[in-house]
Image (cartoon, rainbow, N blue to C red):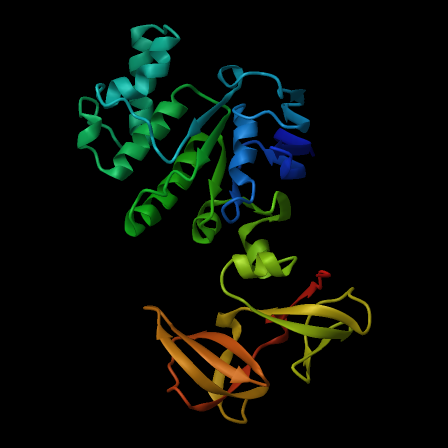
Length: 347
């Protein structure tokens, strides 16, 4: 069942002969919250700018409802963009900032008032109509910027790291607020960030990018629990990544020991990467687990302790609510379901 509103087909982009995007193929569905996630320079913002019309791909097609819009200027596309710098007009109050695009379209005053009022209610700024935008907090200014974009009724809203200028607590609050606004409005959101927590919190699907290539596309749960390669495993949260040998289906060897797992289809005696999340390792007394080790360091993280435990020549990162003193001899265990196997990518 096709439900794509935007489709990128073999999209590449070069700057000064250097490939920034390399044959990107991506379908973005109607009404979804999709996040482009990756480190600086991975191509996520360039992808967003190509969808917006601010950049033209070197090759490939950009389809909107099946129609190629590659050569259509930004103002004729059914998309709006919210940037990290909100670019609000300081000489206009909240109402007039939101209504700016409607005035440009010369809509009737009653329609403008109705649509701005709806947006103020949607972004929880009802009663702020006459406020000076410079008197608003960062989070409130961001809501005005979102309302100004949504009031024009775009089919797609593009957001380029809009939470980057906010403090940690406000950023977490706004993550939930943005997801609520997207669900209530039903508009497709395409969000760019390098923050893994933001992506996991808000997204229906995540596109993990690196060096101009899509590394993995999936739901937050799939991306976190079943990374397809070492880059994704390392970039999304913390991971222990160990070289291993897949002996046969559901049996892997690493660190000189054999472990049961649940993965199949890797063949026999195949070199693989083994991923174990720090929170999936359980600590017990020496001799009671699968492998023994020594606590090398401890860091208090607020809700848990982060410990480095050396075992079989490998330094495991372990997250636990129970702290074992540095130098303690302990044992580590992990259930088969929490041992994730990935194909080993040739260097």
